[in-house]
Image 1: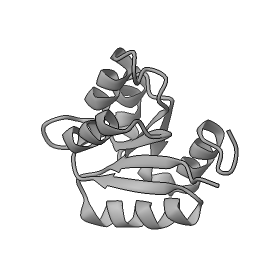
Image 2: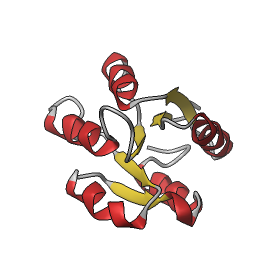
Image 3: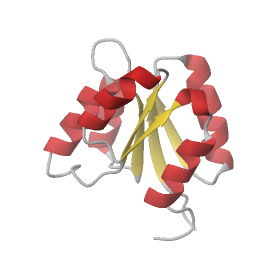
Image 4: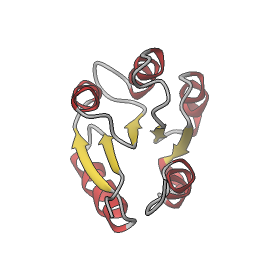
Length: 124
């Protein structure tokens, strides 16, 4: 059975490594990106099951990338989860029309729960 493919973008190498470890352990195939631009390019090459974006990244924010994806007919239905290091930023993330917004400070169980709801492992 094919594992659902996720594109995960965070400008922190440590965060990317932690997210890969957690998400692959939960049954997902993970493609990493160090910027929103890189993530958008990966999505254009092959649309994944979902995309996880850090909200605050240099040049193009996760919220801006989310808006771009939601405005494109090809990716409008793609589940997008935004991660925020600050509770104060969560309102801005919600305005981007993300399917879920998770605070990094709450740990990744919140992210896993959102992903399992949006992209179940082992089912369609």
